[in-house]
Image (cartoon, rainbow, N blue to C red; front, top):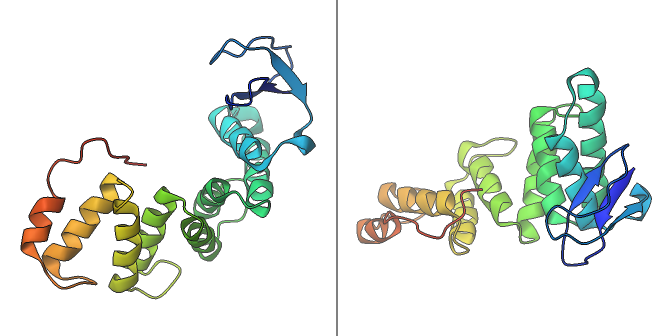
Length: 187
């Protein structure tokens, strides 16, 4: 059975055979729901929950169920689920491994505002994974994520400025970008 928090601002979700009553995050009542009625954000959260609670005896089935949640949420337009689906394709978790599909998912997620997907897609462009290598495209995607305080992307922008990859070398700009990244996301 799937349980979600009754508070619309809390995205707690769990799956349990044992009845659950209270949300451990906010203390509100949990309610039972069918998977089919979950919105895209909660479907993605259910997929994450399933990935975090894999069982050794049902590993492949659990991975398929998690990937299915990500795929359904992606098809409903959730860019975070698209990135998670890309990770499943990249690693072959719950589905056949496909670097090309992973790159497609990262690009979709990046184009729809997912900051960590901007960084992942930038990596694909930089390394030529699943597409032609392009420092210019990589720089654009890293810069997009860096502007939104993604620490690893900021580091790559500084590196690319320093070595003139995808942009003109600008050592003074590099020094600014390589300062400690406080308050930044590494995801």
